[in-house]
Image 1 (spheres, helix red, strand yellow):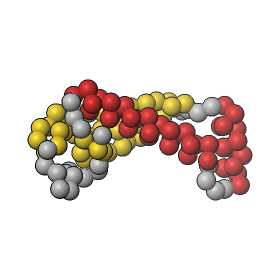
Image 2 (image 1 turned 120 degrees about the horizontal axis):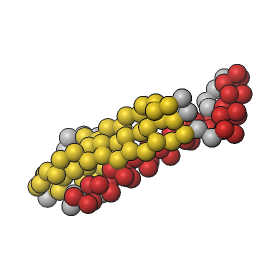
Image 3 (image 1 turned 180 degrees about the horizontal axis):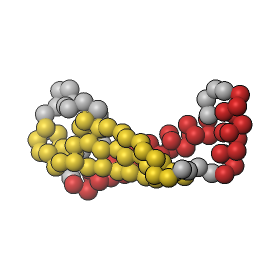
Length: 104
């Protein structure tokens, strides 16, 4: 599965367009990680616990989007974008979306 943020794949032509595909996940903070992150926030620097949580969420959302594209018969997803939003105080949603296509 080719996944790109551009509207085309260099050297390839779109043979068929299947439309919008998306994948999402909602992740909640772990109490233990939250305590460590709060302490790290006092000192400053990267909050690795949250960075790892969101990195995993982005990968899962992209994987789910790619699976939706495969189910359509696509072999690529163009114009991919990611969005993150807060669902509740301790939970965030990550959505990956793009246009599913079959390339020549």
